Image (cartoon, rainbow, N blue to C red; front, side, top):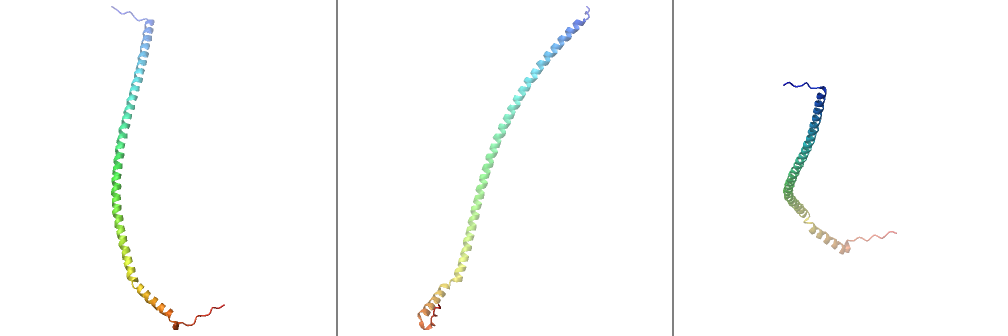
Length: 139
């Protein structure tokens, strides 16, 4: 059995049919590519959303941990400042006591001296013999 040679018309029909099949395959392939791309984009969006959610949750944990640490540090600092302030107040009180003692020591005799001077002044005022005449007003 021998095959009959293809005619020009047969070749054109085969070529036309092949072009149609290639076009259909190309369209089908483009559709599959679009569907795959859409599925891929949805999966990427889901993964991105998941990663964002995980990161936000982790950041909230880190933020809370930082707040707790800073609160603890603030408490320690406040305690140290209270101790330091108390020490400074005590030192200031002691210094003021020393200054007041020094003033007391320095001026302890003043009331007695003032009493003597006051007594002398009163004696002088009461003793008319010590007074020289009062100057007359000019005028």
